[in-house]
Amino acid sequence: MSIIAKTPQPPYYAVIFVSQRAEGDNGYTKMAEEMIELASKQEGFLGIESARGSELGITVSYWDSLHAIQQWKEHSAHQVAQNRGKEEWYKTFVLRVCKVERDSFSGL
Image (tube, rainbow, N blue to C red; front, side, top):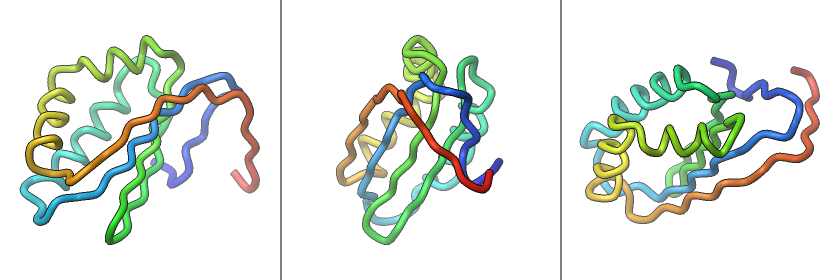
């Protein structure tokens, strides 16, 4: 997968997940890899970008519709990961869903 997602012409949707991790891995890295693999197979998935520093992580996933986002939110394996995140992996997090109306690429 490319570092920068190659998305189609707008409009499409971005789900922005910003998090502050709790101490220790506790299976987080393995689950994150599994969720990216699983999300990439979901209908409506367009791509993902992610960066994590020592204090803050930001993951942006792109989807073709609000329906596709809802389907991903409700996926049973993703719900397991969401619950573990709330209980053990994150000190705090925020999720934002945005409609992308314009984009611009250079060098892709």
